[in-house]
Image: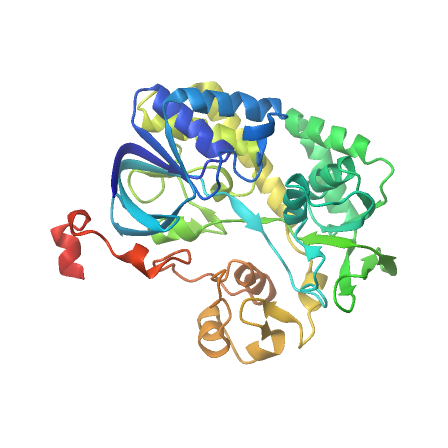
Length: 426
């Protein structure tokens, strides 16, 4: 199978949807690919069915009327040559030949290991939030949330609205850093309003800065959590623990395409074009900034792809959300104590059961892969890679195809999709 389009957009979250709307409304042939069964991404998960979020409803309605085509359950696994993507969709695969590509692959949670973090009942903060949205029975359950950033409040509000009991919100950032970040939100009115609304809803929930998980405890599943709270230890019995430390961009596809990455973000110019011609990056790939950044950059990239002028108001908004992203990165930076929580027997790589002690003597990620199989499991280092970077300073390696686990049959290109130059390289 073969698809041809003017613009292919990888990711149907807010950034991908905004880009698709502008490009398709300008008359371009636009194809949007996403691994999920419906548009919206993680941040607007389920909104295509419920329509509860007015902003999500506005963009999803516009997307449906834009003329852009959406292929759900589609995962980009390789790029056999410039301008071509190899995509797996269920039990089949196809190629996409495109003029421009807009990458909107979003982000995932950053996990840092601590004793007991692999117990059933211990999840990521946003992972727990997603499960609750999808129907996890949480009413009457006792929940502790630990980590950093606005995601803690968003998850707590969701859990509380579904009947869960939030015992504690533990923010790892020092109090001074946390309040410094909060005070600069006056420059970002929408963020300030969101924070104020969520804080008001959670006024009765114990919230602490200078606080983090020391250990999760239990026999067959989570039973209790030990926390460090402003230098004192607290012990809470609970049913669920949501623990993660901010977000990290999903950089596998940009790296596969040859985009330059610096300090954990894709480098782009004022047109959001990467160092690879005709390949753009939007949203969290540019640094974690939330839905506002995703929409602004998605709109900008969509206009550029369509050859339309970019309004000064949009360029100004891009500068503003970029400023917020810088402040958030400083706030979410893991503190030194978190790097010392794991014991020698604590698993760092869950897929391959690699304990911290197995990495003794390794000096980089490549050695850890070769000698201890770190990152060689099903998630291909998406969980343990950022953790190893935080713990040891190991930077990520170049990505080789397939950039996601794929069927062997999906990697075989039909003869009609293999150019002579590609054939000679094989």
